Image (cartoon, rainbow, N blue to C red; front, side, top):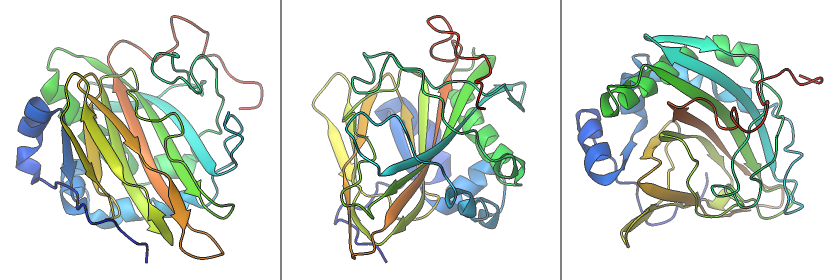
Length: 260
């Protein structure tokens, strides 16, 4: 079991999701409601969990750390259909990621077995439908999917080494997949144009934080191991952007990488 801080997440029922996003700019759902949003049994989401056990190391960490492992994939959602696009670099401008912005980062692609799993496409499409209800004029979502493992076998792990940030997209979905033998990992959400903020710890596997990226800033605090052997925190992060993939106008990020 992992230690969890005394700030429980502000869970809301699924029918309140749309209004919460409109009024607060973010919403937190429990696992059962996430499964309902996706229209699948919770077991279909839980079955995705083993896909986090073979993530390659993130070779781009500028803080010198060796604590982050990840995979990345890109998709388009249009007319209720999910379509993968050729493997591409992940790119963010420096104004949104001061630590790693301006870099083409070629991460290992998602495992085809993960993408083909029964829970994957319904989850992405369920989240896209929630974004549709906030932006009904949008016809196409450009979706980036990130699998993260933050590992503490070497000490402190940092889920967001860039600090409190926005991602430069329309919506961000952060799903907790697992917490194992760690302390910390508190989620913090702040209004982008005011003093309001909230702190809490996602502890239930497949609980969700959904953010309107223009309206709130977010971060997760560092984690530390509970035991000598270390522990980890696994998350699935999806970003939804209507105006193409970040970087398409600045770099040729959608060409095939030689090692992909």
